[in-house]
Image 1: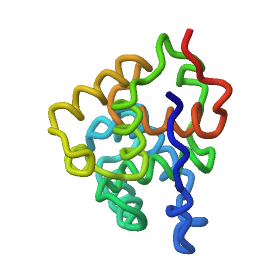
Image 2: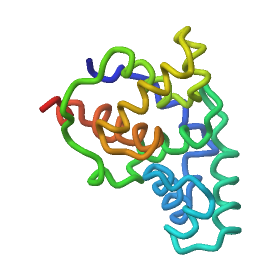
Image 3: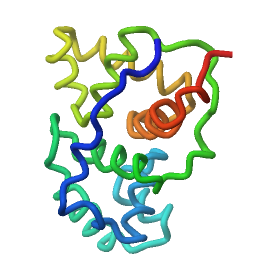
Image 4: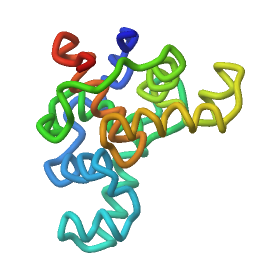
Length: 166
């Protein structure tokens, strides 16, 4: 099943059009690659912890538009949509198609819903959602949901013909 077509344009509020500076774009890309802890992000980027903390706060404070409360997921989705995350580190093909449950969970994560919010929306347990999202992360080789969100936008939504089961 292909990832559902969704309305990511909700992240294009007037305040965010030219919001991210180059260092902020690098931070969001680090989040997409699993460096979401403050010290990990700072070390990965070679920046002071205080600088990363301030940048992270600035970025996430602008991500209130759209459904869901996961501001980091929204920042990753917005950055991927705008081409600020390098797609070359994500696979062009996967070994199997996503199941319907995996597709639904990932679609809602792309929209910025937290795992808990996804479980409520789909009337299932957080454990089931975690299992589905963890299976996706293993399948595409990402460290966490932020990587899966970036992959979904960069490889599925932007180039649907590029991602197919092997």
